[in-house]
Image 1: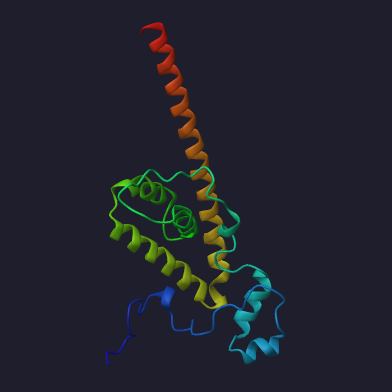
Image 2: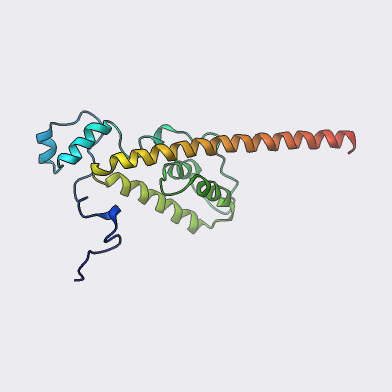
Amino acid sequence: MKSGGTGAGAGDDSAAPQDSGPPPPPIGPLPSDADLKARGYDDEDIRILKEVKDYRFGSITAKLTNDKVAVPAHPETKFDSEKFLTLLRGSISLTRDEKWRIIQAIPKLSQFQIDELQKILEDEKRKFGELSPKHLLQLMKLENKHSEDWRDLQSFMVQKDAKQVEQAQADDIRKQLGL
């Protein structure tokens, strides 16, 4: 066995050995400190759980909608576009612009690429949700930022659609005037 860590992320702070605790308990009233300790949580976990209260990874983006974010036609692929968008909006590893590019690329993606991308997004959601409570404050900040990015993307889509409508109306007027 090699020294210096095992597997991906060895030596990487995001996969540090101190994160060997259990995932956060479900949302709701917290058990007593003694009960939490009996379940494997340490003092830092308990302090952070009290600080974040009912926040769990995914709870912020779960309050958002996919409204105004249209998936382009994709006749070559079959998938639940609402589920796909929900996973995409919940990603904290992709920027707003990357999410936009993925949405625009959907018609060009193969079924395999769509399926794999969906698996990656599901894995991301699951893995971040399984991190110990020590990470909840950082995850909450990231999720808040990415929620703002999603709202920006929704606004961008509305503006883009409005410009397309205006352009079509202007084209109609030009056609009527014979220009």
